[in-house]
Image (cartoon, rainbow, N blue to C red; front, top):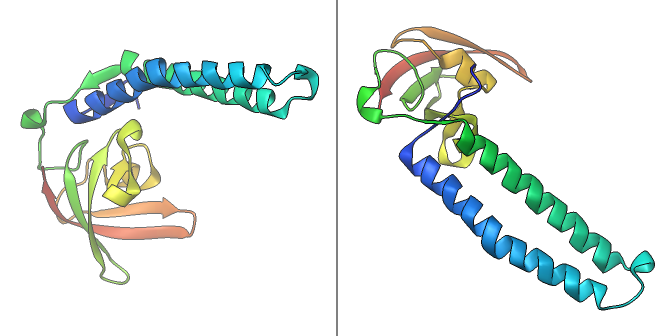
Length: 157
């Protein structure tokens, strides 16, 4: 895979809004928490101060991560997606060859993946196994539980 983060317009907007919130409200709250903990006295034995500083570090780490995602973002226009094969932003209906169960997933970038919403990353084992397949093809997916075969039943937007 390339170093680009392929995002939908909604995905880009969601990440931008989260970044803005963290930079404003998140940083303000972190500074307040540190100030309150500092006011409690001796910093060498102040667990609340240490926790507030750790939380600030995690906040800055998340801000940095989101900035990198947006810096390498490439917007994908859903109107130009080929539905003759599995690719990013396609909805793929698959059937487990062994047990016959069917499921539909949307292939998305890693930053938009959400299994509860049935969005799987193209860089995940399942995503890699499905990419480039056409209706009727069998995708061999290597999972932690072993290899599983899925038949591609339908591809839509």
